[in-house]
Image 1: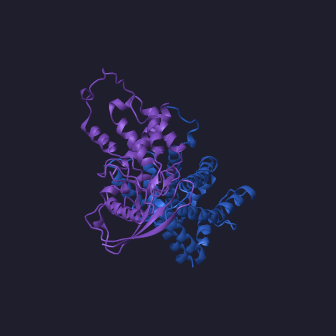
Image 2: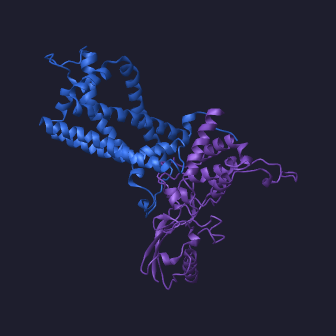
Image 3: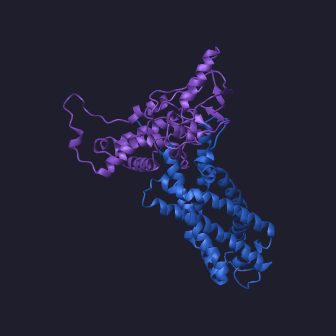
Length: 248
Length: 230
């Protein structure tokens, strides 16, 4: 199929970017979206032009690197998949596809479609861990009985790949779904309960300091999330926050 | 793990406060609607209830200030949250499809909220200011009509709805209130952490029922009195 791509081009963080138009032809519907971008970049390199910079790594939906706002939605029109798992069969011959980077002040654009998501790393550093002695005498995790329901919920929350689609989808650029998933995956387990109060307060503090917006409960984050992280996690984090605020 | 001081400086705390003030205002709206409905069912009971609400010290000097605080707080906190949210994304998308993943109501709470607040300005001008003048400036706490033939509350209410323009404004305002409540009701539960697979569908249904029935009842009362006293 033949397509028209409108892509955000920006040289570096300090220059002003703009949408540029690129035609691409003979695109197979079996290609992934990133393979289509590879085709475009090969053409640009052949012509001596600067290829489009975009993040990618595993290309199997588990690393959270690929982050494109495609036709007005994070990771494009498909549900429950990252950009790397989006296939060109989701588009029609002759389509115009708009491709932009995540937009949030906490995710500044570095180049073209690449944004700096280190704000997520700093939120994790603020409390997204359990302090366990790993010097060789730590207890086997399986020796602690955990209700199956809690284990499943914790695992569901832990599937968050930290891609930032929740921030990109939210009208307020809120990171609540990401932070709540990271809070939940630990607070649901006995190993995480010990630091649960400090964790939720610290991670929310860091989230605010990074400049993310507030949650308006529109639910867009959960719908656009490639791992379908549930809004239940945000409610759980709100409960954890209230409980920690009252008791600390 | 260090934390900030000042509860209301924290984003989640602001949302909790917004939800709690919302719960209070929704409870107030329910009792306001119930009392207004009495004007259709029994004008005498409406007069007696209005007189009680207008002269009872607990209602006047405790609940009324709390209500005014609740309204002002909800408005100001809404503005604070909106300002922060807008400043979190200063460069917008060139092409965006927000309707693909969220409802219009959830994205436009500030618009529907401001419309409701504008209406409240008219409502204060129509009912609250004359009430304050009669009771606290003129010193008339009897609640009686000038000719002493009975209570004034029913007469005052029906008099306001003779004007068709006022009825139209009333109807439009309650459409905005309905849209505000469709998201606000269920969102308040989420903000305070009340969400579970078993309850949430029920809360969502209740949200729609409340958001439609309460504004519809207010609209019915306005149209009823307009037609009955035109």
